[in-house]
Length: 180
View (tube, rainbow, N blue to C red):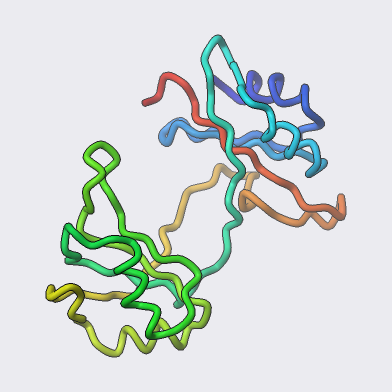
């Protein structure tokens, strides 16, 4: 599956601005000129490309989380998302808290992430390297955002404002069949 095939498929929903394919990750981003056309494509129950069903999702905006996100390692395997979030809420208002689970076994992988609304809340947690959570010592660290490679000429996040068109562009995430 390449850019040409994706462009042809999604042009049926509206004019396409960009198509970026990441073969190594088996995903692609499709940017529509008109945001309402992206919404129409997302509402479609099923997308069949080259005889295969593909899942289409909205791309999440790349929001700079900076110093508001922390890594928590050494979690007890039995911890629930509610217990995890409940412990870290005492340091400040949380935007997101997630315990990472194995996709196959559904068991905790022993680590998670917490994103706070304010940088001060994350700093408060980070004052102590270790915390006691469900009678287990867990380690907290500042998250360093991963830098992703973007092909030259496509230096844009999955959701951005284009001053030329004076509109927001939405990007649709498409897994590429055959790369699993």
